[in-house]
Image (tube, rainbow, N blue to C red):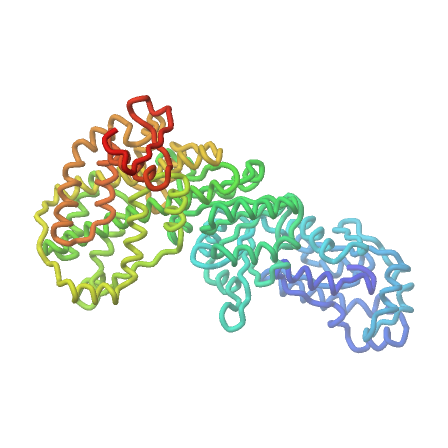
Length: 624
């Protein structure tokens, strides 16, 4: 409400864009006689206005039956406002756009094409009665500020925003809304490809009916309470940078942006510095659990500014999975990009866990077992070694199509999204032998060369000999390999924590991986206690007892696979790592001598405590 020229239409339309309430301009409902009277320079009287105000009251009543609306109307006197809200007293709020006479006169004199001349402004100010109960907005501020101020005073803004409505983004939105959080959702508009994604998504799910859906980024940011809390669920890399550059001009100091994608931890560090220059907080948050986990409760790994984390902690903890004691599978990881680093290593462990099951499946198929047979064996393993990945593998093997097993029709070319590659590189840079992760990654790379593999088999012949293995040997080997995989993953996390000064809490990381995430398992349930008392998994007495019992089976299984020409890279690296890690004397003395021979890289001796650097002129030295 307000006099003509106060900006009712402009502000009303902007409010409509931000709230998604329909907007109606009261001027459109004037009868033609009223328009003609004002156009001739004659002010309207109470009789002229009464029918018009009653029409707007009926309009409001109709709209309120199905939702809310915004109506622009001068509503200059209290009795006019009484007509407008008659029968709707508890549902109508007035917003008074207040401005000075001279300020508004300048606007009217510059306005073109409106039926009301500037000369009538004085008559409007003469009868104006400032409302006693209304949101008051000063028209001297810019429209963006006015809209945000109005929404804040009317409590129309949402508490949390999410950008990117792919599979994970959609599930997280439903999770947030299901927990009772008022949310706003945004998805870009790409003509012919991505149109009305957010609006259609909201219409599909009852729990989202009170949320706001946008494909206009500016309107989306206006719809959020300040300081804003926005989560990005967009592809890692350039798309994340692009949306951040679009967002920065629309954000305010102390807003917090959470990147929930699979970003590289160095990118997270860089983005954190970028936003900090604008006094905007940044959280890099690993999210694990897939579509189902994101909907019902994922494992969350947020890292960054600890003070900023406190502002988003209630939201993240509310949507996270729960451990067996009811605590959220979400914890503050550490500074900088630590959250995304931890998620990266989680995915590396996941690569090897998947590869182990794939290799066991292949070994069993070579013994003549069909997918149902293998699923039955794995079902028995669940009693002692259950995991999410074991569960889904059983489901996959039992899935049938057209009378056969679907697994037999799936092309054996595995994809990857880069996190396994990043983990391998990170391990190499930190000097940590994450051999099972690397082997699992390279197994996927080898699988990609399907045509070449077919040609090589034709050249070298089919190897179809049957491995001499029993189910118990395979099970014990599997359990041993899993211990080594988890040992390597947590060893990498420990080294990163020390190298980057993150002070990671490894038992707590294991705890938040006990539910919601892809690598949740019975083994993971045991790791918080084990990691609390041992520097590494293999150093723990209980783990040592298991490995002494199971490692012989691992060695036998790998031997059988190799002899029959069956690729078992992850199982093979497990036994090779264990052999190397448990041998007090290896072959590196010759490596050091070779390096010193051709490059004068020097070496240390074991007969002087390894404290002195030595070099030998090897050529023609004879017997020293």
